[in-house]
Length: 212
Length: 276
Image (cartoon, rainbow over all chains, first blue to last red; front, side):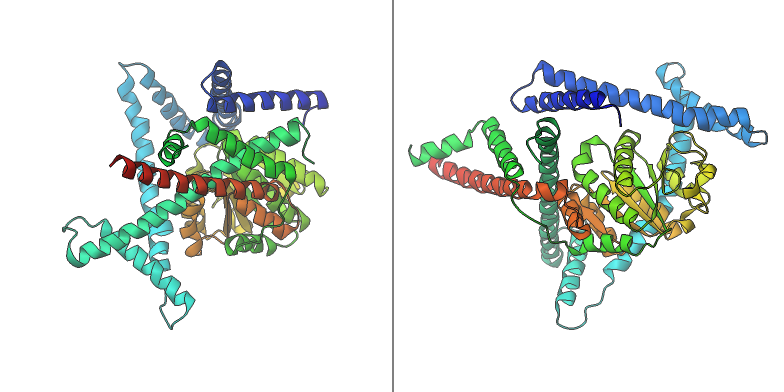
């Protein structure tokens, strides 16, 4: 926390920038542009400073300077790959950047395949193998879930025309997909309204002090 | 105004009028401070119960995976979880995978820690950010210090009492992530699936539908979704905040949008019938 004067200046600046951004709802204007550009610039600057002084310096430079064993030299490999990535700026050497990209893609694919199977596919399939025993709400709920999963999967089966039984199941699948879209849209609306509430609360409470 | 004229006007209504009505709809409930406690739902109760199982001295890992664009939704629930943890004398370790959001998390951490008289380094710590979240998540399963040998201000974690005996997921009793993007998937797939780490999440409303499958499969122990989830959590800890205060405005705005959707559809069909 800063001094009271800094806090007041910060609050007024935040208030001005909030109103500048919201003014776009009326129409595009220089205040909106100013706030937008400031946001992009400050974000980029923050990232640069953070990565340089909290990551590159302690994890790469300091490690190289202080380590004595094999780790001192191992750290040069990611350092070199990182520098090679910058070769994309120059058309004649841009091809070099494929090496670190290939390294990243390889690592990502290797980790991703096992993680998706272990952490997503298998647990989700397991969670779909649920009991349908007796006439009660739990069984009904489980039945809806199973029908939803199966018919949605059938909708995405394109090796046969969607006619007959397959067509009927696919149509049921579409209903589940639409319900899912509806839920997502409802949640998205809630999120956007929440952001508006947050900003208005800031303006009314922190800036204007009209809320207790 | 004729029937046809009314619907034509509605169909060509300047959207700025809609914005103005929405603004009034959200501002009035905030000013009037109407409404009360929001009854908690099962996913939020499960998240609350997960934190409630922690005992004094246990370790809660808090992951800040959001930035200012999601702060109105996630900050209230972050404060509530921190209040619940500090009230039980749980050790809190904060880190994050969105560097630009970490100051927000730190602000809430300092604010709530001060409320409960907690000390930095003894009761809580902010480890900061390290790039490459998948590598960080997997590496933490072996030794946290391989990535976080210092905290956000460069203090060695070995010199901080709060980190005593905390080396890997085995020493973390619960992970509570605050998510506005796909980092939740990585936490589940790398920390839960590989290391069986207990975890619960607070997410933006946009992310909540994507997180429910993890709850249904019991991969996560609880889910707090959006501002409504935050309001429910505030009810559970008995400390109303922005979540509770914002719910009436949320309800009014939702009713308004439902009204607009109905009006828009009726107008569309009436106009089509009149044309045809």
